[in-house]
Image (cartoon, rainbow, N blue to C red; front, side, top):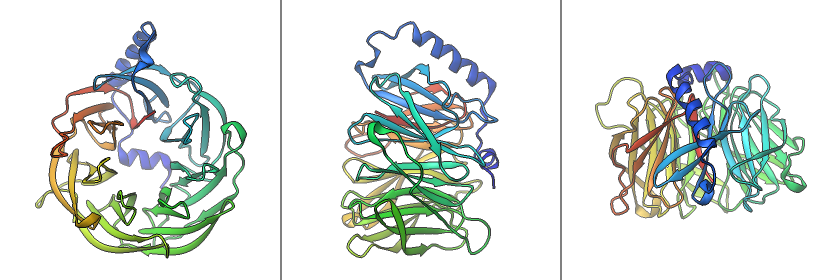
Length: 375
């Protein structure tokens, strides 16, 4: 499956009307820029190849509402973000296929990211990246190649040529690496592969990956992303091809994942398309959230048993079509959902007492949007 066909499946194309509104808002924002960066800055990723997105847009937030300020030219098919711990450098995937890239941008002026350099991801459709906790490397997952690449961070934040590349292999079909992160200790790197129905655990030292464990999930599960709980003792693995979350224990000393239970991400009796997108854990660790494309909902799970147990307690509409991604604002007060097919970012309030999301309170048109990242 190529990157473009993957996006076709995920509904990258948004309506022409959304693109028109987007262009108008950016132009209008540019005339009222003075003082607008006193609040939170957000970066919005969108697809550009065969789609209506701008690639990388900068937005500011007033209250809960996002307003677009500018497009950063030349940053194509941006599909994931992370930044250095010192906040000086932003790293983004450029999800080209068959040739993907990872870009490094200076955040010396947060509202005007400036391209430092871009390097090959050594594969196609890099759909996810993360800065290793050592701050010495960027890890990226190439979806169409089923591979994980290690890129060194050079002086000033630029990226160097790959120090390692590992390729996954599926028992049937094709491997599709969808996420790569380090565990809370930084000793281990975990790669989630949708096509191989596996989570790979790698030892990591001096820019090199060494396979330590392959946790195989049921055939056809399609694991997409995982999120660690706040204790670092459990990982919640979101499956894209089955609307479920696998709860796994994590032994950092041994570098071992163990699947414990499977929790549905949709209410009992749900029918039709059900393709989960993103999973996040609340700042207090008491709740887990996941988007589900098809029913276009945001699922809420209550956490208990010290992190060992999840229970689906709520499922609410996201206010848009095909919610690929959800982000919590830094205060944990608002959800920002990237609805890819409707070309909208919607924001939903979060009740601080119950952890539950409310109805969508507003939206911003962003063609072929796929993610929101707060600085």
